[in-house]
Length: 406
Picture 1: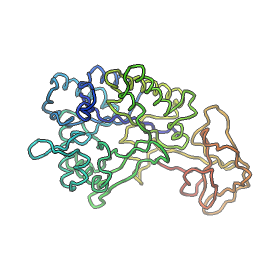
Picture 2: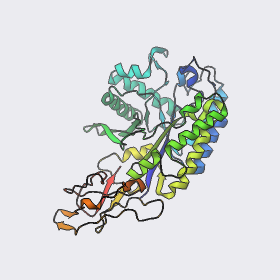
Picture 3: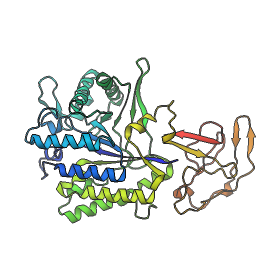
């Protein structure tokens, strides 16, 4: 069964949000539509899917459905056209609140002297619902239908339950749909976590899922380099951190061997790299490696597809990790080693059968000197069987073929 893979693009807009967020630094202001088109072409070439943020009021310059200060209308119209026709068919579109900068005053259209993350921390649920509803409506007015919400910085982390409720109720208010999701958490290191349900109103039937990124931004360092050569080196280092040329190391290898979805994140300004496109070139190298190393063992999906599989009652064969346990070896056969070998096979005693299902005894002498899951294998435990150090998540149920959804 193929592992889901997805790409998150934050801060998408026709201008560089770093220009206003960091005025003490030198940044290019306009992101050419030629760059946006090049990104769309690259994604179509490799079949990339994921999430693409669009700022409804980028940096507080104005509304996308009206005009932006200091930005030619032709440039704005061209950006929206590319996103609507070339990016939206492959990516979920989400607002990143409204400005990704100072909070927007809904009453008079001015800006507060506080950023959106601090405003959300103190806002009440009805205020957040109004705020998010405007974001959904602005995107809908320009022909972009949002499927969820992206949180700028760590917006909502301090009051996530209330924030998730506001996301769900605002989405239902605008689209009359009872399920949505948001992106807030980045788990770039350590133990990954698949998407989960963060809020639910059982009486009204509303459900909100949280979809985390499971990598860091590999191209963030491209913006801080003094020359194009240094920017490209920084991008290549980021790619190596995700997957090395031989495919044996990197965060993506860890996620793949663990059976987790490969959810990557980067930023629009990281790909732009101050006009050098070093991040975009790095993304191309990353996609080449993913295609060469993982091939058809991974499948590109959108974040909304991953979010729906967080529902406990959902049975979607497309994105389930099927882990079949051999009645002889007890090995997990979700993935195969890259070198085609059979991997480590422990000595297993004769299985005991009962009405509750099958159980296996794995003696201590079966443990190898090195952990086999590094090569794509692992041992899954049935209920009541202890296999310390060599099991992934214990499988629920008692049948031989166990299925655990992401």
